[in-house]
Image 1 (cartoon, rainbow, N blue to C red):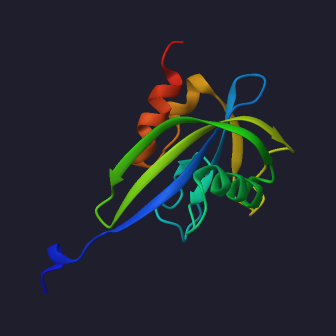
Image 2 (image 1 turned 90 degrees about the vertical axis):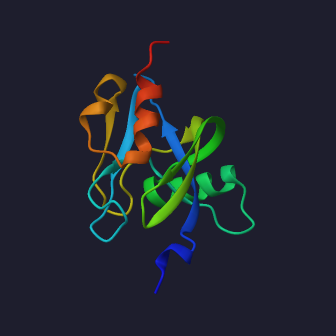
Image 3 (image 1 turned 30 degrees about the vertical axis):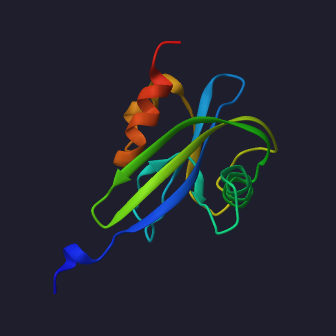
Length: 137
């Protein structure tokens, strides 16, 4: 069977870059059963049919890390091919939220100084986010 003819799954993902007052960025570690298992990530998730990216981001961040997003702004967009899956990451900078971010689903999570983000093992698609966050302002 020719697998070249089978289209890859493309997933639109809403991703949140969440910064606290100290300038630290919130990240979570992916679970064992997830794609790119055990890698660190910026929280978010799949955009469901009928949702806008901001709606999906608000839903995912409340489910995953227990915050209520009140404002977000476009940050960047990345298309990446993992071989088994094509992803489109629509990354938003969360500019206002309520609640205390934590791994609501039991996943490890932490606030990381922006300058140390490159020390964490992120999925390949997240490399551009880390680089942009670490650029001189």
